[in-house]
Each structure stands twice: as C-alpha cells, then as structure tokens.
Amino acid sequence: MSRPEVVVVGAGIVGACVALRLAQGGAQVTVVDAGPPASGASRASFAWANSFSKTPRPYYDLNVAGIAEHAALARELGGGWFHRVGNLKWEAAPERQRALRETTARLREWGYPVEALSAREARRLEPELAIDDAVDLVAHTPEDGWVEAVPLVGAALARARDAGARVLPGHRVTALRQADGRVRGVLTEPGGELGADVVVDCAGAGAGELARLAGVELAVTGEPGRLIYTAPVALALRHVVHGPGVHFRADGSGRVILSDESRDLVVALDAGRGDPERSVAAVARYLPALAGVAVEAVRIGARPMPADRLPAVGPVPGADGLYVVVSHSGVTLGALWGRIAAAEILGGLADPRLADFRPGRLVRAPARVV
Image (cartoon, rainbow, N blue to C red; front, top):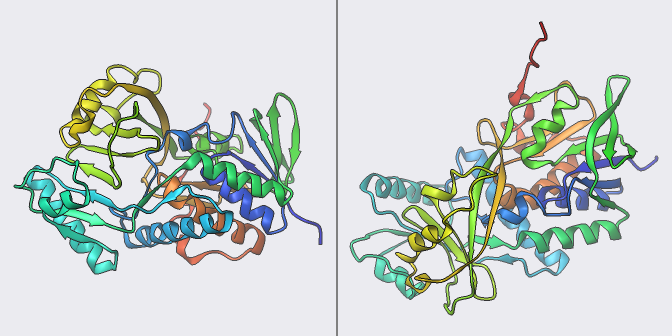
C-alpha cells in the first residue's frame, strides 16, 4: 500500500506536532506556511500549559491530557522547553474571589492538583510577590507550566524531517485543488502545486480562510492580543502568576513576559504597540522588582478563536479531504492534537474524546449571491 500524501498548512505548534506524528506514522508529509515556522500565534503566546478554567468537562479532560503529552514529547525529543513550574492565582474583587473559590472546588472535585494557600504561604513560594495579607485564597496548581513554543516547533519539525517530511516556509496557500468532489491538494505562491490525499488545516486564526477556499464557511476568527517583554531584571520568579487583572512569568535570561488584561487583550493587530510601560506598571503592583524596568519587546498575535471558543478538530463537512485542527488553547493542546489527528487520518478511527468538538458545528451556509 502506498504511503498517503498529506499537506499540513501552518507551521506553528499545532502544525509542527501534527506533521511530526503523521511523518512518524508513515505519511508523505509536506508542511507549508506563508512565513517562517512559528511566526504566527506560536511566537506571541503566553504559552501557559494548564486546565485551570477549562470547561465543560470533556474540554478539561483534553487539556489535562495535553499537559501530559507535552511532558512525554519533551522526553521523546530531548527538549527542555516544557517548564512545569506551577501557577499562582488570586483575585481582589469580591465577586472574582467567589468565582476563584468555585473554580478551586471544581478542580478538586475533578481531581486536578490544586492547593488553597494564604497570602503568606504564597509569598513563601514566591518571595518577590506583593500579595496583600487580606487575600485569603491564592490558588496554587503545581502541575501547570509554560512552554517555549518556538524551540518546540523547531525540534518537532526537525524530527519530522528526519522521518521524511518536507517543510516549505514562505509558501502561502492561494487555492485548494479539488477534483471528483474532493480536496486533492493546494496551490501556493510563489507558484507551486502540491497534491495530497488529505490537506490538514492548521492555519490557526486563518483556518476559516483556508476552509473558505474549499467553499465552506467555518466560524473561526483571530482575537488579537499583546504581550510585553521586559529588559532583563535580577529576580527569582519561578511560577506562572495570575494576579488581579494581570498575568506574568519569567521568560529566560531575566526577562519577564506580561499582560495587563485591561489593555493588552483588547488591542488591534495594527494599533496596539503604544504605551506598553503602563502594562509593566500594572504588573509592578504585584512584582515590585519591575518598577521602572524598560520594555524590550512588544508582540501582537491573533489567537485562533472558534466562534464558541472551543476546539474544532476533524474532517470538514462539505469539503472531503480537508481536516481541520484549530483551538484557542493551541499551546496546551498542540502536542496532543498531533497524536490525535495523525491517528484519525492514518488509522481511520474517530477519537471519542472529540465527540463535542467536531468542526461541523461551526460550518455556516455560504452567503447566497443574488
């Protein structure tokens, strides 16, 4: 039996992991991306690996499995990109404190490792944090972590190449080749045609645009967000931290990556770089070592966002030969998506964990021309 030909569109964390598992499974894989690998959402992600606020239960379970898959992939590829350092979260407003208590109780009920700490206990874990003693709950989830997405993408693509895959950066898909009622490959710019038995849509925020080339309206958009990277500062921050209205973590070489949710989650892709120092000042309320620290970089990315904010994975109805893998939690789930998608595409057996997350629910009838 001949090896199936598969084109993977998108060389971010999802596309790289899908390509790796397909190539290891015996497929002839070609990865195409309009830019360099990991140049989209993967390089502009906070990259918190977690299942903290993930509901409903089937989505929570997938994210738990995704964290475990990251640990397994790091062992397999010998990478040090997965940092299982734990997360600390607290709130200030009474209604948010109540919600955090409810989340903590749910996590306990579902078996997620979580500890309810006092402010003083949390400061023992992270002495440089400024948490008011009046805070009576800091949720500590020790199994959470963060992922260096770009090194992971590089390692996964390198191993996929070792298994025979081709990686073609700078190849933007301009059309899907269709014949006999089925997607049969892609056309790319700067010129090229790649045949395929299956095309896998790992285009992230552009997943809907790619599906549209097959005549299918898939309700997926991009939700812009901004991340601030500080200059190096001498501190010993270890955990991922979610304080009131902010989140931050260490990012290597003394830098801190952060977001002030009142400003950085509501930016536009073309107009979100102004005044990042205000975001640093917002975080410095809880991490005083950042007071006055310079901003070294600002990154804005479009986070993939299905209309109901839940994953869409599987064959696309109305476009035989097109398989989509798109989710907001692309980092937490990326390694798992690679294993699941390859098993379904090459093995032909539907994964029961995806019963609630098939793309059919996001397919809209195309607009009628009158």
